Length: 61
Image (cartoon, rainbow, N blue to C red; front, side, top):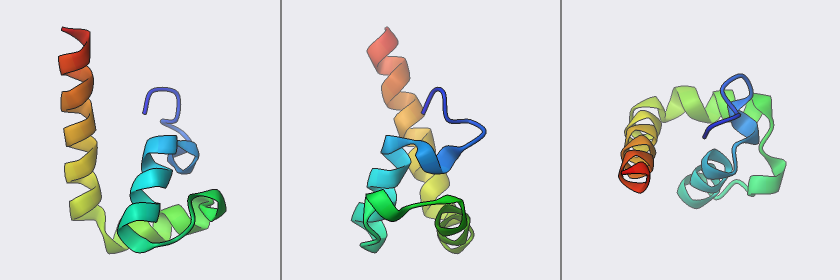
């Protein structure tokens, strides 16, 4: 997710997650869609972000 801290809806990882989890096409995810999804699924999304951070740390070791 590096590089998308201020605009997380532009992250390909998060777009993919939103598409696979909710069925919303990744190409249509914008700020409004992202925040609506985030507040509805924040627990699951935060677990996903922690998982991707763990994968990054494995990759860098």
